[in-house]
Image 1 (cartoon, rainbow, N blue to C red):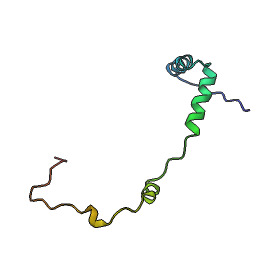
Image 2: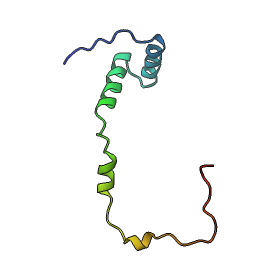
Image 3: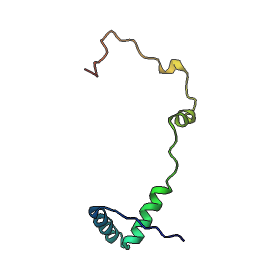
Image 4: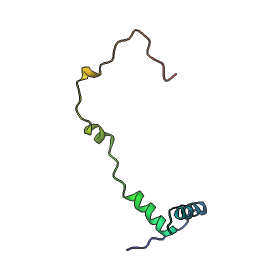
Length: 78
């Protein structure tokens, strides 16, 4: 396994790391490893296009037609 040395960390971050480690019953080094692993092994975020492409085909355009209203549309950006 490789070693990782991180220099120039703000004292407040080191303190927060140590406090979080104590709360989780781990050493600061083990907490640091856990944080790095969690941050770097997350599933890849899908692009907006991928999300749209994954949406199922449901209904027809007519199913989503707006009802005509004689009332003025709400002014939400004023």
